[in-house]
Image (cartoon, rainbow, N blue to C red):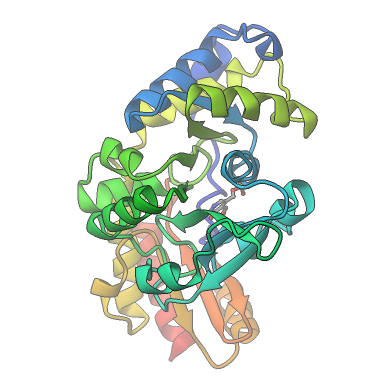
Length: 332
Ligand SMILES: Cc1ncc(COP(=O)(O)O)c(C=O)c1O
C-alpha cells in the first residue's frame, strides 16, 4: 500500500530510533529532561521566541497557545476551514471557553479587510471582545497553501496597532519555509504565539511545541499539566524531534515535487500545489477512495466530493510515480 492519507503516517527511521534510544532523559515535570530542554530551546531560537513547550500533539499546542491570548468569553478570529476550528473537536470552546468568528477564503488566505471589519474591541458588558486572530501556514484543508510573508506582516502591523494578538498554527510551517525560503525567524516575528509539529512532514512519531513569551510558556506549562499533558522521561521523544530537525527539514522539497507530480497526473495545474498537500474535487469521494485503495493507493475523503492526499518521508519517487499512474486511471 502507498499511504497518502496523511504525512503523519511515517514510521521513525532506524537512525531516528537510534537517536531516541541513546537520548539523555530526566523527569520533565520537574523540568529535568535535558533533551526536552534542548529541543525547546532550539525551536524557540529558530523562531526568535523567548520560550517553547514540548507537547504531545499539535492540537494541545494550539489549545495552550490560543488560551495564552484569548480568555473565557473572548473570541478568536480565524479562516473558516482552520484546523483549530474544524478538526480539534471543539477543544478551544470546551476547554478554554472562547468563541470564534470566521472569514472565508478559497485558499485559506488572510483577508485583512474582513478581519478589520469583524474585530471587536473591548466594549464592556455588551459584545464579545476579539483578543486574537489565528492564521494557519501552511493551510491544511486549503491544500497546503502558503501565506505570503507580506500578508502576515500586514496582519502583524494591524494587530500591533489595535492591541489584538496573532497566533500562528504552524503545524506545517516547515513546509512553508522550504517552499518559499522565508527564514523561520521572519515567521516568528509576525506571531505572538506559534504551534509547530514534529510529527508531520518532519517524520517524528510524536511531538509538537507551543512558542511564546517566557511568561506565556510558564502558564502554558501549568495548563498542560492540568490537561494531563505533564510528561516524564520524554527525552526519548524529543530526541526524535531533534533528529528530524537535523535530517528531515531540507528534504521536504522532495515531498513538494512528489505532490506536484501526482497533481499533474490528476489533471491539476501543478503550480497550484505549493507544498505537500493535494486536494481534488471529484464526483464521489467515497468511490474514488475505494477505487484507489483497490489499486494499492490510500487517500482520504475530506468532503462528499473532495479527496486529499499528502506526500511525506516514506513516499519515494517510485511510490509517487505509481500513485500518479493509479490516480490518473481512477479519475479517468
Ligand atoms: C494545521 C494543523 N494544525 C494542527 C494539527 C493538529 O496536530 P495533532 O494531530 O498532532 O493534534 C494538524 C493536524 O493535522 C494540522 O494539520
